[in-house]
Image 1 (cartoon, helix red, strand yellow):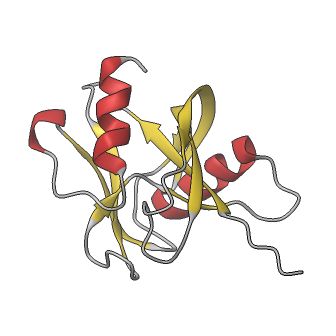
Image 2 (cartoon, rainbow, N blue to C red; image 1 turned 135 degrees about the vertical axis):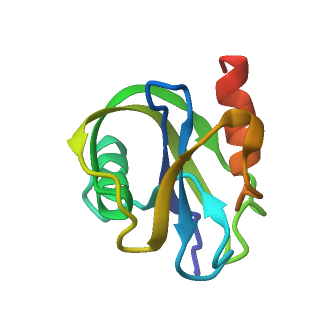
Length: 133
């Protein structure tokens, strides 16, 4: 009997003091060169809360802590590589210096009224955050 299951990912939502949102420019496909929330795959044996803090540090140079769970996004078509389920957290900066790294070629804060085209379903996630979901 063959068994398939979705891959588990995390995404982090972080605002600066000016209420701008942190995005990263993807270094690799899918969506190479497009912008996304920082995040990535959860490693085996890792808590999702630890994974999002690790991924954000690797991709942006920023140290963070989890403030709260935003939601779980599980549309089987959200990632062209296959079915992924993302656990999304609101984060707070605790240190570090902003710079793109690992899977991100750039990292910067954007005004919510002037966002670039986003990867995956990250536009929906940001809409949910702004609605207070």
